[in-house]
Amino acid sequence: MSVNILFAAKESDWSEYEAALATALGKAGIDFNLSNSQSADFSAAETDYMVWSPNSVVQDFTPYTRCKAVLSLWAGVERVINNPTLTQPLCRMVDRGLEEGMVDWVTGHTLRHHLGMDAQILGQNGVWAPQTPPLARHRQVTVLGLGPLGSACARMLRQVGFDVAGWSRRLKDIEGITCFSGADGLRDALKRSEILVLLLPNTAQTENIINAETLALMPDASFIINPGRGPLIDDDALLKALDTGKIAHATLDVFRVEPLPGTHPYWTHPNVTVTPHMAAETRIDSSAEVIAENVRRGEQGEAFLYLADRKTGY
Amino acid sequence: MSVNILFAAKESDWSEYEAALATALGKAGIDFNLSNSQSADFSAAETDYMVWSPNSVVQDFTPYTRCKAVLSLWAGVERVINNPTLTQPLCRMVDRGLEEGMVDWVTGHTLRHHLGMDAQILGQNGVWAPQTPPLARHRQVTVLGLGPLGSACARMLRQVGFDVAGWSRRLKDIEGITCFSGADGLRDALKRSEILVLLLPNTAQTENIINAETLALMPDASFIINPGRGPLIDDDALLKALDTGKIAHATLDVFRVEPLPGTHPYWTHPNVTVTPHMAAETRIDSSAEVIAENVRRGEQGEAFLYLADRKTGY
Image (cartoon, rainbow over all chains, first blue to last red; front, side, top):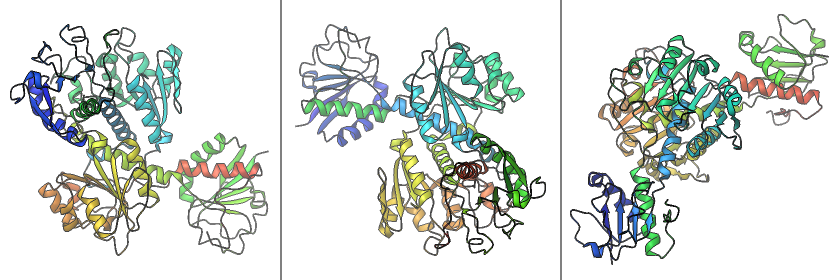
């Protein structure tokens, strides 16, 4: 008998999720009947699983008497965990895809600057101009911020071969990575950052951490990659450092104001690449796989992944 | 006492090697006196080590009576190993840098196409156009050729997260890589190659292996990366496939004629990136490290690396 799965998240996301969920459920070997709220041929009482997000039309879970689990598409469940009508198990979304996508993006742009790819991508002028970049192991890359995303990126950059250092507020210990912390550590980390990756959280301590003073510590003609938070950078100071060549190029994915206004000087600076906050997106495919895995677990009587705890609230 | 090291390779390479050798010897903790043949302040009889290549002015090794080793900058030693005046130990060059550089270049350009970087690098037009690339593990990459370079690249692409297959004449077994061989295997390998990397040797069997028929097997809008050999590709067939969009982009590092003539259509095709045979160069830095390590070993009485064997000839 088919498992009735109701997509009761944001209605406009249905068109994107329908195929991904069908694929993931099929791969998980589930005989499913998947529908959104508007076109379901099964009733609330016949629903076996609900895919849900806080912006759902469903806020009263009482009618879903047979529902084995409410599967959130969001990581944060603070808006629903205390809903008194929710008696079903609630599972958070932990999307490996967000971290993986960040690692792909950071590794790709680090290699791009390391190899000097733009010279060829932008310079198809018929002139054969041999150049040999250094090896990755002779390139010093520094990652500011060693939380889950920063340390995942640092580890991958190390695996690719780069000479990697990292800096964090509290000293970390990561195999193969030279770890720095504190104010003196920041200076040492910046002094060796031929390519600097920003993955710090946005706090009062980190705002404008990249400013005229800290930029001056970096090696000449170095690169900045910011997939972290816009306010980490003093934009005027960075533009000045780009003009003097102190910074050879900045690839920026996040900004104080997004979308970045079309008149912002970053768009026209020849040594800036603006990317449209694409480094870390929740991925439909990998989220759908988490949903499918939890349906599979439910059907086979196994423990759910990422089951929310009503005591701790997450 | 300083170790007298004579640079007796190609004279025009001295300017590039001098600093790299000095750095590497310094790092190896050697108290050295390094000079080229023209400016040496020590005699042939006072030479402790000789850095050498077949195009050296030194072809008679008799005067170098104290020389503890002749350290070749070339991998192949067939032009010197039977020289009757060469009684000193002879060491070949095994440059990790060539393989590492290839892996850097292939990984970088694979990530570039995977992430669709060119859209941002070439399109800084003030328009914020969000896009989310698939995750690396949802991207099928195929490497044709699983020799030392091909398998090193396949392994790294797998480590980065890609879904990697490889094809070789004889079936290989590489952990994490879907391996194909033979004619049927080639069809299967091409059918799943969203990004195709060519690292085959140039033989009668591999010439024009990428032709109208094999291009037709590839997924629509796929990518070709060729750091292998120019003749692997039927250039006219590739240009046609680029024109129809069957192939979204080709990044080519090697060509039938090099330097690629300025009038070749590859230079002006909007979906081709020509790179100037830069993917696999012998690296001065890594070669210098091998030389320094062998000097260190000689001074400390340890066995030399890559000691040539006069019986086998290599």
